[in-house]
Image (cartoon, rainbow, N blue to C red; front, side):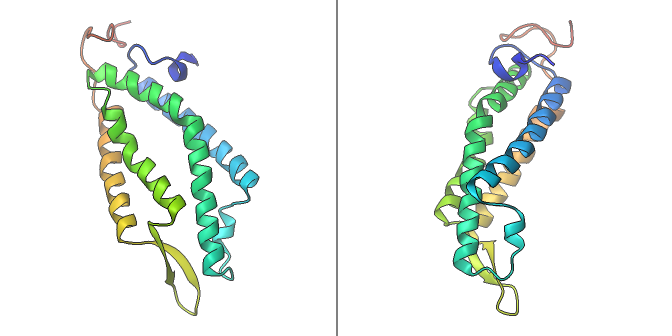
Length: 172
């Protein structure tokens, strides 16, 4: 695999290369997620501890948000490289990247602040974190923008022939 797929911001890539790069990033992200969460003392299994109190659960959710921000920082450049080259192929404006990332960034910041969650009684005095109204709004916005990004980057054909960003990647 050509590493310029993740390191260069120039040129165009077709859907196949975008999907391949995205799948590689997801696999590497999941590996790093486990490592980072172990390093900061958070885990997915901790969220299943029904005996933990509300404060412990919220602290675990904040640690998970911090882990997400660490991973965001690690993976932002290769993700942007893939997105930019795919947007170049579609001859779309680069500012779409900001729109595509906005719900994720807002969600992470709200996760750290605790503003998007509330503790809910799920029966028998067991408290679990759940999205509040703001959390649901951000989640819904993320879903809509995520579907748009997926269609734009992963399913729609690029510009046929050369465009201002270079030759058609399918022509070579």
